[in-house]
Length: 311
Image (cartoon, rainbow, N blue to C red; front, side, top):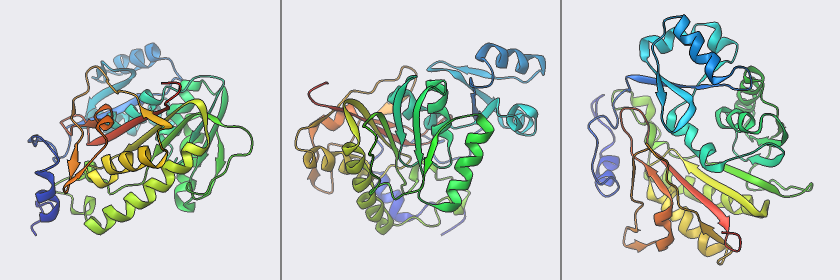
């Protein structure tokens, strides 16, 4: 396999997953996105600072606190007080989407079940304006340190726990919002000329991740308030980790949960798969969202669950 080649098995699977393969899907992206951290600075003041420093940026139509800059400008921001003081935080546009779908609000009880490195946790805290209860769970010690560092940098307030998300229990009331940004095979983040991005990929790993994801999602559902929202997200393209997990969860919970349609103006999506490897999925899966990898975003999958009674 040459340095520029993706795994052959992955390429073959991709033919049945993507309706079309964008030319830039697995190329290094020319742009870097940042999230304006409104816990420390307003969107307007951040824009003014960037203009004052003559840093060119683009606004993002679906997210008022996100900007896009070219790579050279990104490095300038990363080396400046804007990033070092937590005013701007480097975060992929696709990574911003699950929290937009989750829609956390001040004074709610919110759980981020797989929290490290803290990008989405700090984004949730921003939506809540640090008001309410936010719990960030991360079982891996090394990643836990990274989570704490990001929370400190951004000024985000959260209770931290370090437990396997499949076994976490909540004794102080149910959560209004739960995010399961699940560990996955990361196919949406593959870069063709960066072999380390796909060095550990295998079909076996996909199956292992799928098994773990089902446990995380099921346990999260046990901690959700009756009128709550549960968002499941991955940065992979594998149906076994996306549609199959959603299909399994809908059957396992025996009609207690439904899927809410996801539509984000300005974000390119493509239809979820109705079947894979001769296995048909629940037709409601059409309401989940597959994010097409393009020049701005990596591949992503998002599903929004709600109690069927409250849908």
